[in-house]
Image (cartoon, rainbow, N blue to C red; front, top):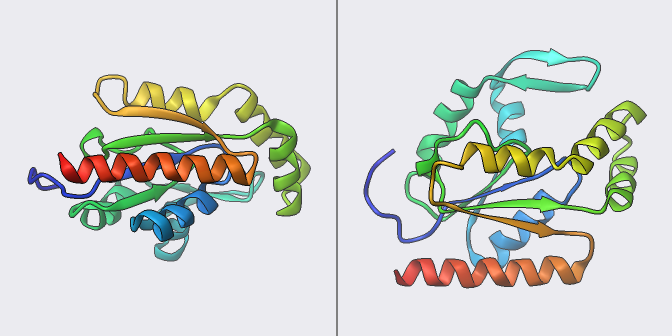
Length: 176
């Protein structure tokens, strides 16, 4: 990736499946004007995986293939990346990391409405209880100076407040 300064930030939004990453990123795309890149969809559409986990009904993505596909998309800045994992990406790609969280009862209901298998719901709720995504983000970016925001997304009010906070960040970034 180029060392040229970006005029618009790149933001990684991560969190357990079902916390509202895609909804949040769609709002950021509409309100803030950031390009929403849904990594799971990219992995599926471009077949950026070499294995499939039948038990969890999901791909086991190839980190190198995913990074090679993402790098040119992020180069100019102004992107919001939506993915459940933070540990695969270089620090220099991002200006802000957001870990979305949800109350486990809210999360359970969302995953149930997606018709996830009970085992998959249980594993994702456990990941939220043990703040797996938050810990992964902190560990992945501990050497960098990138801010990591933990944001709860149980209600529309929380969503609106978080979008406004990111809008302020993006506006400040553009002025710096």
